[in-house]
Length: 115
Image (cartoon, rainbow, N blue to C red; front, side, top):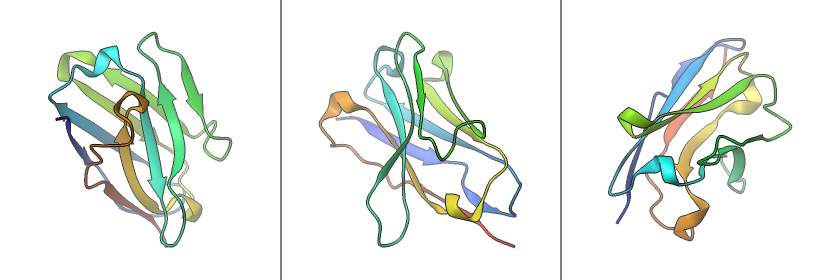
């Protein structure tokens, strides 16, 4: 089974930046569409960004212009660079692939944007 480990979250002030990492074992991520999701307390999981194996990228409207998704295939890792962070970005962030039927969720990484 796929094992996914998200990291890079933390506490940051509004306007700050974080880079999240999604490291995988059991799959070669470069051949899959990879997504970043987030889930705030009491809310449904939300798709934040997506990158296909061919490099096609999608961003939720709420993060366009602020977040960047990219891959380092040599490290089998997908990243989410988050700039100009807002309090509304506070959530647990997860990576996954639509190819895996919603299984294999990792523990996520907490992002808290607060003064």
